[in-house]
Amino acid sequence: MLVFSKHKLVFLSVPKTGTTAWQAALGPHASMVINDPPELKHAPVFRYNRFFRPALEKFIGEDLHVIAVIREPIDWLGSWYRYRQRPFLKGRPTGTHDVSFDTFVQGYVQGKQPQPANVGSQSKFLEPQKNGTAATHLFRYDDQHSLTNYLESRLGVSLSTTRMNASPKDPLILLPATEAVLRRKYAPDFRLYDSVEANGTYRPEPIPSPIN
Image (cartoon, rainbow, N blue to C red):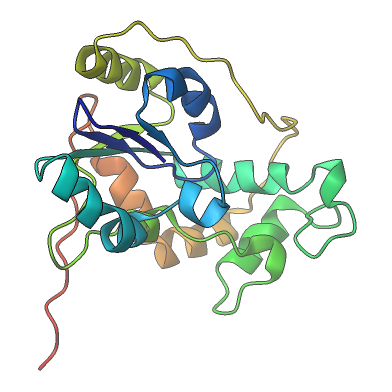
């Protein structure tokens, strides 16, 4: 997570969306860089709302812009799958060396996910809170141009990024039946991705009213 106090901007780090590269590029311009522990570096909206927002609004102001990057859901899962095939995870519970991508996704859509497929959800990460806290802008991972333009305009700097933590690009095969289940069970993730426009605006889903 990155905070730019003078520009009233917070950049949330959704895992597997290129945020490590953005932290490297933006770090010199940020007033706060949260690199560790991972639970805070990748603080979702609910954790930002609980632990960071109150202090930031007190000392910076209430009209903060909160931005994040979202990735096409199947591509996002593919990035997780490839990342967990790295040599240092060989033989560890979260490694994916001995399973196909289709088996990985089959595990992901289960109610109780096996450890390799327990990677969370982008829509859950970005879920608006009942007090109205939410990302104000979302940018697609495959539209870095729009994000760069937004950041350069808001921060008043010129930016370039270098790809980091790239995993091997082996082919990923997902059977149609598995994809159909994924799209049904994780429909909010696909809807959220589809709602993002080139300028960073998006249509967050309404928060369900409590049942009396």
